[in-house]
Amino acid sequence: MPRLLRLLVVLLPLLALLPGCSNDDDDPVEIPATPDKITVPLAASHPEGIQWDAANQRFIVSSRREGRIITVKDDSTYTALADDARLISTIGLHLDAGRNRVLAAVADNNFNPARTSPATQRKLAAVAVFNATTGNLLAYTDLGSKAAAYSQHFANDIAVDAQGNAYITDSFAPVIYKLDLQGNATVLLDNAQLSSTTFGLNGIVYHPDGYLLVAKTSDGSLFKVPLSNPAGFTRVTTTQNLAGADGLLLSDNQTLLVVAGSQGTVYRLGSTDGWATAAATGSFVTGAVSPTTITRRSNDAYVLYPYQPTAPRFAIVKTRF
Image 1: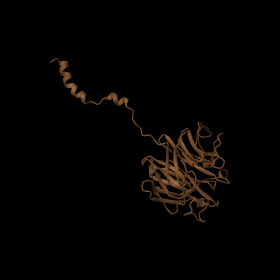
Image 2: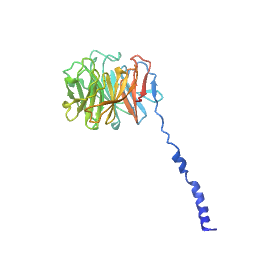
Image 3: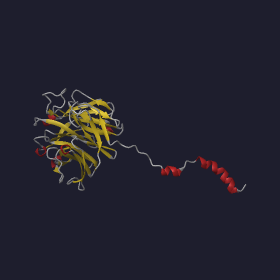
């Protein structure tokens, strides 16, 4: 038998065992589609805060009316995660995934008839910290007593820096609190420019360059607060009307999403100068659904639709700019 023919006889059975490479190259990799809208059949919850939990493929949602914290799956099913008698209304949430904890801002604006009381109504600012897996309460810290000069308090939103320090806004006092990993609470910033006769500071995010971006609901102000010098905070210059600003999402270092609830719109802002100035680069209209805040899920952003406080449902909706 010729040498070439003998070689083919040996190689052909081996070649038959090899996978077909050309088909693999042609077949696209299927990535599961994320839902456009999740409608949750939970009545009168009035959810306020939301975070995406990538590790468990679920949303974590707070409740202004019930106080408890739940999780929501893509199929609209929901499960209780955490509760405590002191959770009168849970407002902003922050999932600190690296430390496996969920932080919840706790307030009382008379939305929870089962738990409100004269002792806490319009006076409560606190943070509750839970184990993100079990829902067990790890810590509960009063904040309002650290700013006792003000008679009214409403803990609203939370940001966490790389070291695990949490920063919390107060909508009834012109204050941003700091809570470290050891549970020590202090006032980071107290300034009259942050005050409002109606509803003041609200959404807050941490920028990895070492500062906070903070929104004020009443007039739509956006502030940049350097952590190395909080008193040297500045107002971000923008021509976009952000009145009604609520939740914030820093989708990348130069892009901020702002939920303007009273406008029924999510605005996309961009900055090229370290948030000295910002310009609108897009918007997503929600309509009259009382949107509160927003969370990132991979490359998507989802906004929370509470509807009305007595609504038989709420929704989590993918934004499209």
